[in-house]
Image (cartoon, rainbow, N blue to C red; front, side, top):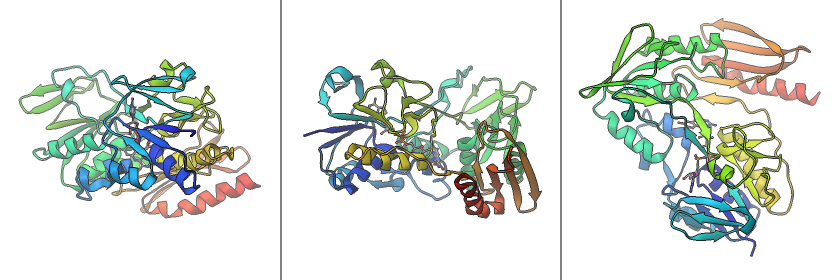
Length: 382
Ligand code: FAD
């Protein structure tokens, strides 16, 4: 029977099941999820307010519809407690046991919990699921201004979304400039300026970690003495791969669940895919890598071992008031060559041999994305 069990019904879990069925693989599949199993696009969570979509409006298919479409069993509101690799079993929190021939961990990533201090610390919100988004939308009804902690990629997208629906936003964080881990300073400053023009307040390099509640409002006093107030606090300080279950099962973990290029973990019957996986040393928590990985893993599971080969995958940042596309060069040796025009910023990262190794484009320059991707592909092929 060769049953396949997939833990997780995010884009990785459902995506893999879809790819397997496309290959006409008819083995029994069981998908297990702690949530309601709705199929939706998680990137929409930080851009759905401006599109006037509520949580239900983001759902593309219910768990029942997915079960029918995939000819698979979907166990919803069901938590896996632990895995017993030696017995090839998954043990649920209610004690039930699910056996597998092959198991795929598609358990995603969890929001990083900063150790906030102060009387308002426990009210800080995080948005990483449909249920969180429903609560976020609901809480925003009476809110004029949000204190947003974490001006990284996801934080800036939430700020963009809030500004577009007329809310005020104060962005607070230790970061030297917006999205500083992914884009060079000039590009971050371009975004900062545009969002400032439409009302964003920026408080960079000054957060001290304390949130105080004053009646129905919140306050944080920054290291420089400035007091920032708001009606709601959102933390968007990044995500951490969910490795606990894998670690407890004795699988190799690092930042993510360690896999080889076949997405196989240190146990030959267990694979990992999506935000939880660290494939050949790289944890890439974006949609394109999990789609490329899902196609390769489906082929491997269908008896055609296929390594994951990632193409050039720029990151598209949905700050629609000033869009950004970036292909970070990682730790490759080279230098940034930046130009700033009224249309936005263009940065080319040139490696030692004069070869394009990365780029950043903002504003109207984002239209050049495919040209620069082609240039990088040509350099790789040469
Ligand atoms: P998830 O969607 O997190 O799914 C994890 C699944 O595991 C869930 O079904 C959960 O219930 C289940 N699970 C976990 N533990 C257990 C357990 N013990 N028992 C049972 N079930 C369990 N990427 C982009 O490429 N572009 C973007 O613009 C972009 N924007 C984003 C905006 C936001 C706000 C966020 C949060 C992410 C964004 N991303 C974006 C990242 C992208 O959404 C993720 O890479 C992708 O959705 C991860 O999918 P996943 O299936 O790996 O994980």
